[in-house]
Length: 202
Image 1 (cartoon, rainbow, N blue to C red):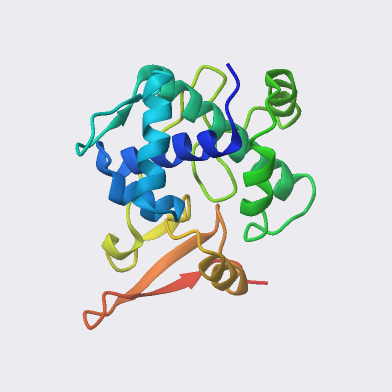
Image 2 (image 1 turned 135 degrees about the vertical axis):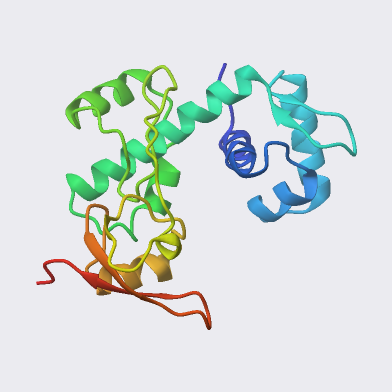
């Protein structure tokens, strides 16, 4: 079954919200997709009719197993394309999200399978998000928040939570990316910030 770009965007957005909140409501989804609540309700009815969402009016909702499978497929394509754009075409990590948003809607399993093989089956995208494999499984890592690390702790950056363009540009300015080795020098109680030393700055 093929889905419209709009339907796929809603499915993916519900998935991302579920990762954070388990169950989702219409207000949360409207904010995420930047539309009116009435439009969200109309789409939820469509997705419910296609058995992709467990939905009742005025209640929270979740993706069905079928909906989750589709969402993981979209996420897989998005993150593989981001990896390709950064590691093969030389894009910066703050340039690839919008491009991958377009490419993720190309519905060719053969293309994605070959892309995955060409990239040697990466487990994580350029921002540290796990890439679902062809069966929807993802590699998980035990991660710690930078602000929670004790002073003098040495760590390796493995994930960027705030993936806004401004944050990624700031990190790029300081030569911080996935795999960068850092050391915690000091904690500031005033605002919870941390002073770090970055290993091997150019």
